[in-house]
Image (cartoon, rainbow, N blue to C red; front, side):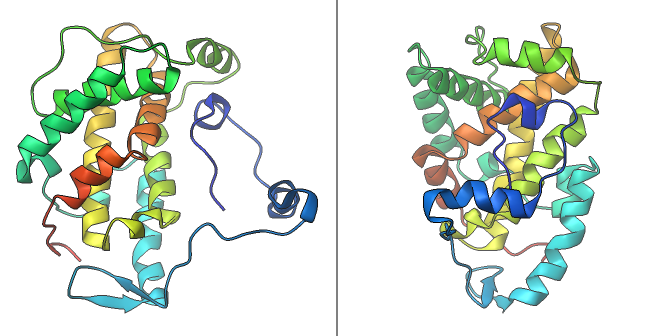
Length: 237
């Protein structure tokens, strides 16, 4: 079971633990039946040439998740992988600028994509002079009032751990590609976080606002293009 990071109360501050039984009732709806959103095969692709059993993959994944949730460096937790734009800078720039163009609308999701573009471009040293309105700012104000300060690295790591655990990365390719994507998302998130902190935002809140941009941005076709354009290697597996 994973939860959505698009809600401020999920990402900022303490929250009660989930009950699988209650969650199943809520997700089952009127029919009280759960429907799968993704099916993993018995073997998991580590690279284009290598697969391992699901049980072996689970044993590989578990310590990575523990390290991410603890707030360790994603680059250390996920292994030594190249940053995506080092492989295909032109695609990285084009997708980031496309997000930036969309962000001039009044849509909050589009504004989140604007911040995602700020992170993408800032990661390669092209920090835009002007950012965008911060979407759902009022909701984060409320969440901040009832929350205690948490390490920003833990907020980002919690999101990355969920992205790894939910296995949706299988739709885009093997595990080595997913690792590259997650490390890149971590760098984008850190860039957004630093930008917001420089504007006076509390670090854990800055991380939470970065997470919603990461969650929305990483679910787009544009990000799929970036990830799929890379010829990922199996370094560190």
